[in-house]
Image (cartoon, rainbow over the protein chains, first blue to last red):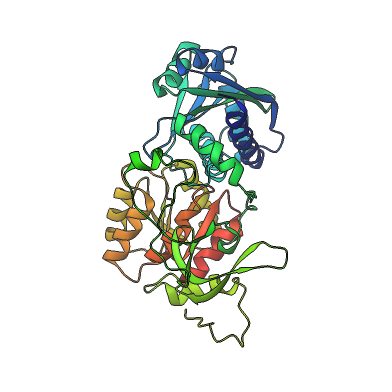
Length: 307
Length: 119
């Protein structure tokens, strides 16, 4: 199998981590390309080889039934300078070589948490579906063997490594990629039509990007049947031609409408009915969200905006 | 000025949020490091506003939010969580949160969210 989809995932994730890292430490930068290895057993050892130790290790795992996650390793001296930049008290007075204080470790852990969250979001964007992650495990590793063991334990089939510099210290991001992601990526890369853009600092709720999609219809079949579908087969959906199409906002059935073809041949959805969030919160939030949805022709008899 | 409960699994973030709130004239009446503790502290302290992280051990922020709203349907909760949990935004608001602050944040954004929750 080609490494191209794997490296594409690695690049997206590395870019997201770099942006998050630069927020915490403006001088931080990525160094070199993403390197792909296969098999956590051997690739894991290569991924941590030559890293200055001891290092703070932040590990997040995927929790949606696949094995893998992301690990960021930052040598203690870099972590200390990062903590000082973030405003962790006492960091500047701590002697080099001393252990990190609890507050320093917590500050670095939070920066890493934000980096790992950005990484998961980038991965979700490339895969076209949300990737759930566990809370980060923050620990200090003192030997290469100890760091390699963390990577080995994941048993991930693919290992992507990329280097960064943080406060003049070389750090490393290791992505432990499950096979399922590679399969999804092959499909998602072809279908991807939008690009995730990082939200600005302190962005308000309205600036948070959400995925929006239209659903034509559904069907159910045994997993084995779906895998054996030949080209040219027909899958019956649960809708008639004249039925409205459902609009989803971040997984929430938000509105229904009709498909239209624009002058340039692209598909559009004309919203007929806004369902909103439903429940008590609707009255507070839904009108704000609905404001951004372009309205159909006000003279159209089909428009029934109900929020 | 409001009595605020600050919930985050990172001690550093609890301190950051608390410093911002104190600087804005609010009173931090308590802190919690996970969802279980958050619900217990809410019940005990009945704060006017709660800032709540999402990704936490033991019980995540959404589960804690659900329980807090069940305890007190008028609870004013501001979610405060890292980028990458975009799908949690609508879910949080639907469950009854008043706002969603994305970390890393600026002080004004946190204070603004608290003010909005109090309004």
